[in-house]
Image (cartoon, rainbow, N blue to C red):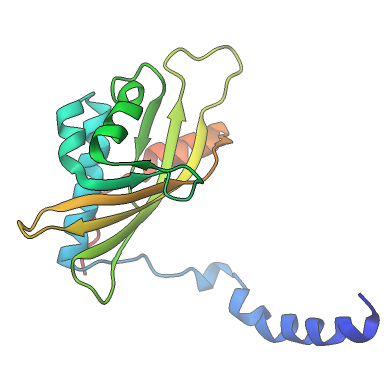
Length: 181
């Protein structure tokens, strides 16, 4: 990049800097959610609990019949039965111990579609010395059916990164009830 071409970029960066500045006084307010968004929040927590409790039937009840998992991969898993089969070792805890919770839930212009997102912790059921748990960030899309029940339609997550002890402690302390408006 030449100095002449760097100048517009530098000006843009300088103009945008106040928007990205973080000071202790400028901590963003805690999010709050509508009553319907909290219903999705609670569904996400109950869905996670079905895995913690090794409840395969309960897990399946949260899935939309046409659900898609690993939605951002070239070969997503499609359909309730295929997902349940793929997740069997996660649900029974033999493959990995998975826990998660939402930190964000939003409902947009369509009141039967919701987006949820948050952290997830992956731990080995039999960790080897020095093995670190993994942290990922998940995103889910929920659909409210004609019966009024929210079911998971799309699910995806980031690649795991090894979690420090501090990150694991923060994750464990982070699960909370939905903060209603």
